[in-house]
Image (cartoon, rainbow, N blue to C red):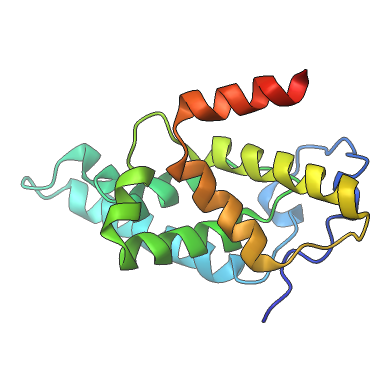
Length: 161
């Protein structure tokens, strides 16, 4: 089993992260492949836009399309967004019921990454080990999409007390 998420030590004491251009960003395992797929999809969308039967918003009608589109802008500097996104795309492609959760309008990859980051910080404060099993992190991402927004807000409010 890969250990994409083994080193979360920086999240115990978060550091300020400078905005970096694409050339200077850290590449996580699998990120290059996903970015290449995004570029291919962008090129395909550009070609498809010229065809009259393809509507402008068609790329967001699938869970995969929504994730890929949001991944272009919604990242978290502490969380390896590519492996989580790839996992969610695969899960949505295999499980149509789960794909419906991703397509909920109020759910977003940015909120997913923020939720995962909060869970990582909580876990690291408990264990102090500096690493978390990949499956645990992936399950937090799934939990975010499956949990009602009102319930997430209630849980967050409860934690702040």
